[in-house]
Image (cartoon, rainbow, N blue to C red; front, side, top):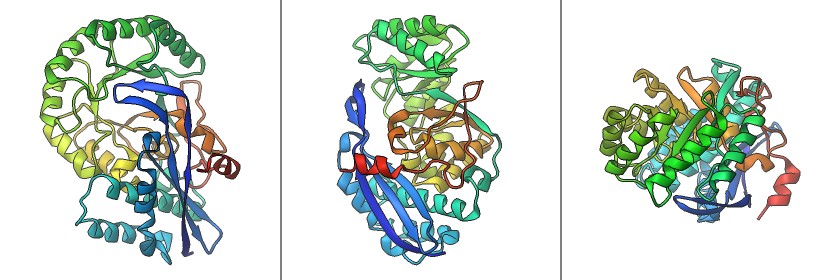
Length: 361
């Protein structure tokens, strides 16, 4: 089997309503879909995302720039693509758009290789489990009132979730603490609750509010300070009883290694796009395992699920519904609130052609 064409399709994915986060207003999760077509009739799929569509065309062009490397390639030799791509990117560096472009191609190559084998990616790797703990991440935003937070938290539990994440970043610490208290009261002590500060605090602020939040038994306190302030993250992690989670804004497994050496987080959160694709995502997970550190995913739920299923130290899947409208199927929860690992070949989730046509830019 040989790859005969690389095709990209930009799509607009408006959020159900604008979201106010500590990073600003989020209106859409516009994406570039990556398709690798073959002479055997199989097509590999990948996805790259740009919030609010910012520089989406640049992201698409970066992915298309790798076409000469994949035309004529046997997907079983996808490692040769990564070797060539990393060498070629040396001049541009291993962060930002260049790494993201590699990620889209690598996603599609893994999908192809698994489809050719007739296996889900999880089973191609040798899965550790048939279901992965997951948490609801598509709600509990800063723009919600306390009453809205409580109603939404209750709706997540009724959908079967046993874990969920809320955001911090109100003008005062008292407001943030009151909101966490309200959600904890709404869901009770048995539901796991995470809090994400989206990199908006100083080290001193994070330690201070972190101590105030300890009474609510948070599963983790996420990204309180700038993602590159690993020394500050280490100080916060050492000061709090609550585990610190971070890493979604780092690039490649080497970025994860730097965090581990700095003891910057108790839980690592590799992002499939910023890692540079599945190969680097898995490498990051295995490096973290050698440090006895668990990993959770960031966004890209449908493709991260099979990868986490194959990592012994996988903690939980971020269930973000932003891409659901693209797919012909949705992630299912079992009776424990865990995400069921699909059995269909490839990622187990394929883009719905009618949805792609409807959402095309």
